[in-house]
Image (cartoon, rainbow, N blue to C red; front, side):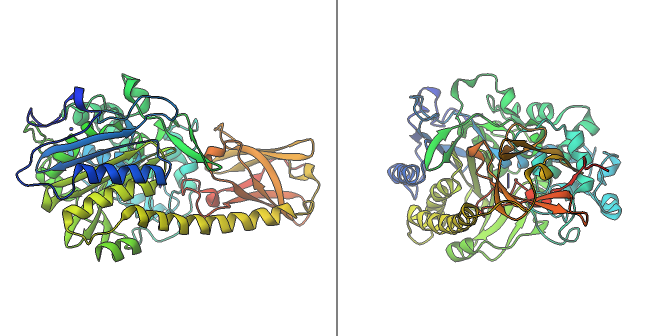
Length: 527
């Protein structure tokens, strides 16, 4: 699982022209032409099997470029335009931080207030961490939990409630010291969102809609997919399954709303970026959040290891996480950015405050490489980077990544293809298992197969293929997940199966499949 009124009438974007894209007159010629953007997008979409993309550029307080490319859904004629709604995923996090900033401005909360003062049910495994955990800690990925810890409580779609997820946090084991290092999380952003109803009596969805989306005139952008009033211009998510691009249904992740469920368009998000670049002042002149809060949301709290690609391409020396935003240096400029991803859709947001620049790239396919190459090609032009072909860079990076993943996957498949029978009779593995935070899972026998079903979701069910001894591979029936997992059964001294643990097979599996954090205990062994 591991981001707004069109500017005044002088802005080029008109509803009747949105599908064609426009280029408004600027005081001087922009450093990248529409033709170059068009060519880069076309090459990226072809290279990475992307059916639809939308691009926006905000400069000097104006959205002066907004254009859609391709189609909303493969095999259908409806085109992407600047008003097409995309799931923006984790670009939602900045909205959650801003919503809390509004409450800080009102004096109703402070960043360093203790979470348990607002949510008494909040518990981490360590009592000290529980006592000391602040609202700031919820927003800065420094909890001590591993990357994506607990994400299986909401992804793939589950029937967990927010209260149940908060209750499950106490069972997640830390992998580092509290506030000692960066590990990206989603669950704690959901907890941050729950501060809002505790203080205001309004849900996160209602508060964000009433206090951010509406003042910025961002409709039809919505706090969740289910809240979209008119679905006449919405991008359909797509994934590549066995080399073939396919449309998939939207995954319902409402339970984790504050971490990633806003849906928005280029035209809508432009107003959000204009407000960010203006230190909280909206395009209509209203001060949404104070300049002081704006500065705080762009101030690094947690050091993030510098990405080697950023270091080599942009001479990046530092990287950190602020409040809902990633901060880096880039060829001497400050960069404020974030990405967002849900199953089948990804979004890219970058700002260079010194240049009063914002760049948006949305796609309806989960290829993060595609959005990055388009965004970086545009960014290069504005920051004066050396000339380079980001599509070629992306192809090389993707080939290296895919080769590494395929090598691992092929090695596992080879072992499985020659595997003998499991250590024990199949019936010995069948039964009910329970993990403290994820709940029940069942293993049942169907003829000569074992079927694993993890409760509270329809997606995590599939056959277990023998691999080695007491180790099997779970092949999920939903192949869009791309998340097959090893399943290891443990035995007691009496030889009975006592537990079940899991681990992803492929290094390409999304971090939100935190199988490694599960430890199921068999609950139905005969006495």
